[in-house]
Image 1: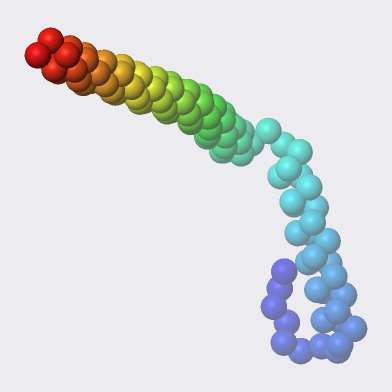
Image 2: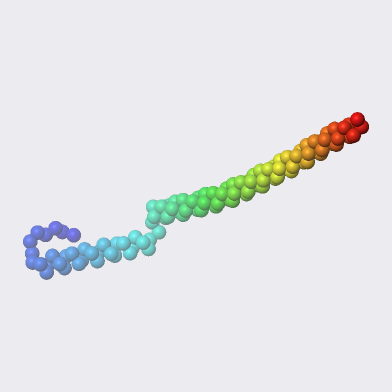
Length: 113
């Protein structure tokens, strides 16, 4: 487009409209043609998108595995805690039985006298 500083308003408006139409035509042609640069850039974007999807899937799998490991750890800790409680309860019963046996022995010794 030639730059014209003179002319009437109508001339400037028609020149602007023509240049807009030419730009639009060039854009339409560019989007229809199989330009190697455009195709390469598009392929690159698609490759990046595919890699992003793979990373997201890997992260999702990793998150699920971490949650499963945490749940397994929690179950193991709960089982260990239950075992410790059971051991303490058995120890308390054994201690009580020992105290009772000692008391009965002392009572029997008193009865013998």
